[in-house]
Image 1: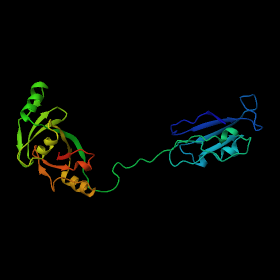
Image 2: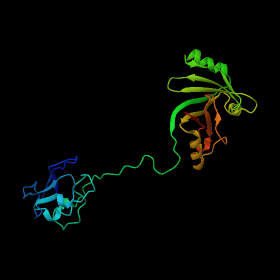
Image 3: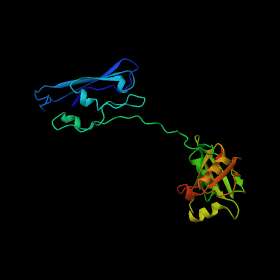
Image 4: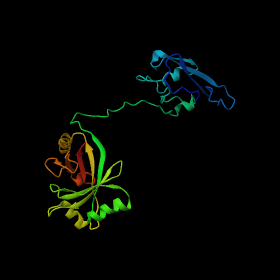
Amino acid sequence: MRVSSPLPHSRPSHGTASLELADASQDGTSAEGGGRERRSTIEFHGDTLSPKNWSLQGEHEHQLGQCVEKTQSKMTSVVDVCPPQPAGLFPRLRTPVSTVRTSTSLSSHPGAGPVWNLGRLNHVAVAVPDLEKARAFYKNVLGAEVGEPVPLPEHGVSVVFVNLGNTKMELLHPLGSDSPIAGFLKKNKAGGMHHVCIEVDNINVAVMDLKEKKIRVLSEEAKIGAHGKPVIFLHPSDCGGVLVELEQA
């Protein structure tokens, strides 16, 4: 069986939509080979495919009646896989015809829980063995806007921010004997990327939610960071090998 007038994909707001079908004659002679071609029309009225809204006209009426299924609310497809037919009767009808179906959109916020949102990338932090040398490179060689060193004793680092327009780089250098950056530089003597910092709109709720999801944090509570805002670090083993800092936006 072939469809000579395919049903429009869009749902009609009024009027009718017709699907014309043709196949070989009942004795199995191919229509293309000169045999009698039998034609039928399925006519749809309105915007749903409920049985009351369609009618069959022509010689396929009994078989095609089994091939039109009712949809839920939208016009999606007409012909579905038909039940097996006797040999020699509508041989092409036994080939399944794909059906387009609508799917229900999932909620963008599945489930209930604490409400917080991830924001923009605040900065990428790079540990450097020589802070002044690194500062001069970004300022004098690359021509970037580079700030002054800022000591952060609570975090054991001195930092310099490099403004890149859409985000920043944070140059980190050890400060004090217990600096976590000192240990990093022992393993990476030339320096390298240390962490990424992402803003959140509610850091306290975010920390509570992440702890419930078994994401470890490196301090019991958020501390004030270089921007004067609360920050907290997430364990790299729980973040794909990346040390992630969250900062209150």
